[in-house]
Image (cartoon, rainbow, N blue to C red; front, side, top):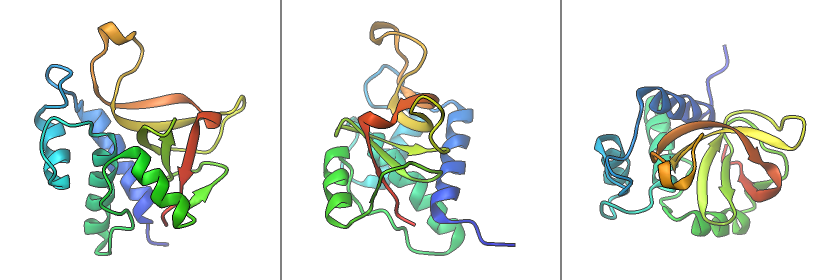
Length: 157
């Protein structure tokens, strides 16, 4: 049996977090689980945490597999995208475990390949689903309709 990749295990961990119901308390970048993601980053609380969540998932996966985390300690989506381009980690077609950078400002994890129509499934933190901005509840969500054309994809392992 082949050993699971850090990227694939990071997705499993992220999906588990979505099932647990990881949410902000008051749409203020704070909450019990959110604080855990931010503590791992070590750069303060109450900040945008989408890339911190991705890093936390990779860190947990690497620890479980007893290997080095392939994701750098970069907690801004735009900065992570710049790093990925520089390090030649960008791929055209997303697949399980890739990091998505949406519109240069939001990070998440790809949970499967591109679907007909140019969408792909993902799991993302510091986002919301199925509502408008005024009625949102920020947290970790499983999404099915991200647009490939709006994203850059980084493949770490």
